[in-house]
Structure formats: C-alpha cells, structure tokens
Amino acid sequence: MSNNKCFYCECKLGEDSEMKSEVDHYIEVAEQPKLAFDWNNLYLSCYDCNRKKLSNATMPVSNCLNPCDTAENPADHLTFKHEYIRPRANSSKGCKTIKKYKLDRSELNYSRLKWVQRFEHFLRKLRERQLDNEGRKLTLREREAVNSFKEPHHAFSLMFRVYLSEEDL
Image (cartoon, rainbow, N blue to C red):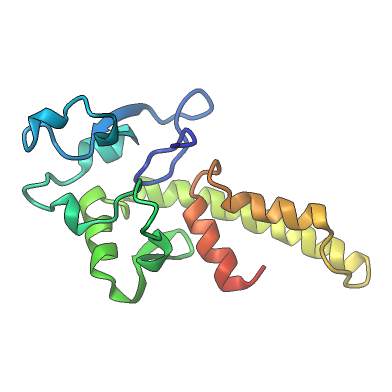
C-alpha cells in the first residue's frame, strides 16, 4: 500500500534509501488511545514527517489530506512549482496539509530537486533522440519510461503526475 514510501512526503524508505522509516499513528494515541494498534491508523512515514509534524491539537488531521483516503485526489489540493510544493488554487486542505507535515522543508525540497533534475536530464536525452531522428514521435517504450515517474512506487510520484498532466507529456 505504501510502496515503500512515506505516506506524507513520498520519499523512498527502506534498503534503497537513506531515509529511516517509522510507523506513525495517524490519529495520535494521546487523542484516541483505542486506535493505538488499529491497522487503519498506522501509516508508514519517514523519520522527519513523523517527528516534525504538527500535533493534532495544533492542526487536526481532519483539516488535511488523508493519504489513505482513495476518495481524495491530492492533485486537487497540491501542485508543484519545480521542486516546491504549493496548495492548488489556495486550497485550504492543501495549505493545511503542507503546514501540518512540513512538506515544504528545505531538505525535502532538495530531495525533490534531485529527482526533477534526473527527470529533466532524461527528457533532454529523449528530445535529442527525437531531433536526431527527424522529430519522430516517442515510441511506446519511451512513453512508458516517462510515465514510470508517476507510478505509485516511484519517489515523489504526485509531483510527476502533476507535472506530466500540466505538460501534457
């Protein structure tokens, strides 16, 4: 379900990553102790999102996006300007989600920037190949490679989904 990513910031976790993972109580134990061991209240998160998030007393989770709620589309509330996360159209839920989980912290922006640079380098190489071949269209394999960045298992897949939908690639 988590694709070895933090539910909040989407950084990769585990063996292939420098990020340490933790289990987060989505609704804090102090707030509702009976949910302490409820699977639906346990979310995989990175150390930073779990430790740096605002308490529910300060910013209730009900005001934010729930990463496990499939009825909500995060792209309706969040967008990106390069590696910087922003609320879409001043979405209150987007603003509060960014604030609660500190999704605009500098180290997270830097991690997203590294992925944006890899993606842009990849696109440049594809465009060079297109020009070398008289402007041919992308092959199916090339389109699949571009689209792989927005697959759920990919780090920061929401950022790439937003970017690819806006760029119409």
